[in-house]
Length: 358
Image (cartoon, rainbow, N blue to C red; front, side):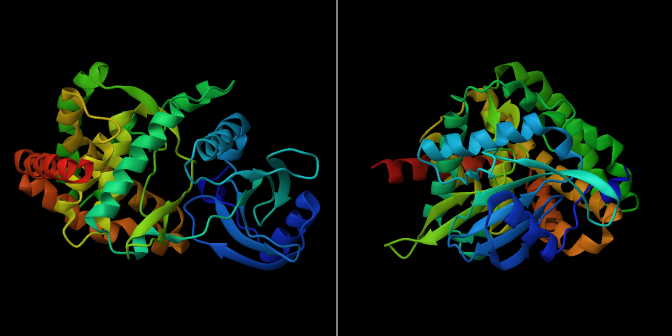
């Protein structure tokens, strides 16, 4: 199957038919939402309620056990007090359905789920106050501690050997780095990968293992206004990148994506770290790896976005969302250097930790 034809491309009438047949719901409104490699639709049926229909790409649809695991994780978080979506059963009582359909590339199989709709706006659209960044860090740590208690027969599917988006597999970028040929950014990416090899890989045995959400970014966290003119977190979305990793990976991913949305990116790490450590204080090895892991996530994001555009030029605008600021911020924190960045993050985290714990 061509990599170009992995992402589904269903139209609204096909979606309406699917929703009717699988869930006995009559859609009065259907609207496509932006997505990376799946297809997501907002669905409001005349019977009431609001839902998201998620059609997995053909590649991920080949692994129903993994998708079942992700679906279970969402309901597990929800039962444990974090706002995640849950899957609505089909008329036959299944939480997902494997549909063999043609959306323009011949008949292929796609896993389909109807998920509950969570209210709120993505964090990318609101000002990132210190308090909100602290809450984001705290929520990310809480999520990882809850996921670690999960038991499920398909837990092993999260091992995901050679999963390109895992921070355990940063060195897989070597096969994609050619997309930066002629771009001065390539030298920084190569230097970060060398650092990863020398300063993260040898410390791995000291990092604490856990199950990672893997993509706690500014488009996957929803917020709503609270009583104090600030915002509270109202939803955690998209568990498609879940994998077995280490606690510090989700912290690094969270810091990196929140830097993208902040006018002063360097100031993001401290409050997120303070929030995180209010639940899960870091050990020395985790502290030592954090800076390089944040840089590594920038490299993954920028290189893989550039690569995806070569496959899906028609989706370039969405795929390059992160690249607009990402290149500038990666350069900035690389030029500041490790010592300076760590000092800013850890000093600020210590001060804020005292402030919010009082």
